[in-house]
Picture 1: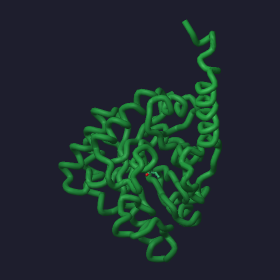
Picture 2: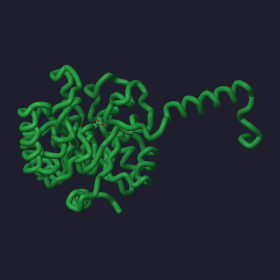
Picture 3: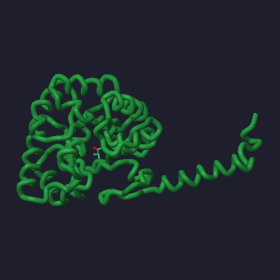
Picture 4: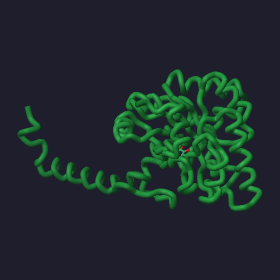
Length: 264
Ligand code: KIV
């Protein structure tokens, strides 16, 4: 059964946890879909995992559409959220509507994700009025790395917790259907999740969130430069891939590949 805004909302109501992974291509999307993962995020983290940039800032709308479209083609049941990249929704509501509309029309996204809280309320209302489901993103905001200076845990002070809670309530009231909570203490994740009727999807925000999202490359051991504390490796595909490729190179060098079974 296709995951929809309604089924995801019902999962929160029924206390069922929601799984989400990032994904950037068709073949992997098929695997994720077959594994029964509820949601995919075509995250702008692709700037780092797929494109080798040091942060997410250079990613463009065009690129999100190309990657998003490939992922959507691989999904029968999994709900696909496409990230709005840096400066694609900050200049004006009109420009943001146009770009989010492209994510839906050209990539086939089921929803879009935006980084920010109360300041996005007018935009979220307009998008929802137009029929575009919105998942905002609170806490550590990678698109604000230049002003923040570093990627750090938020919600350590009372003032930060109050701001996170009021932002969460504001985006819910504006019509957001779900909310990403990135890198905050588990107790803060719990308080926000309890305060809302929409599902919270945590990354580094503890067990009490209504769902969890992880970067696929961290989970599969494909991004080996560092492993974030909030991530768990479920496979060592980086190591396995290197071994397989080395075996292939050896076989070609030694004349062991192609064999008779590979020849016409
Ligand atoms: O771009 C991304 O992958 C994200 C997740 C880390 C939530 O925003």
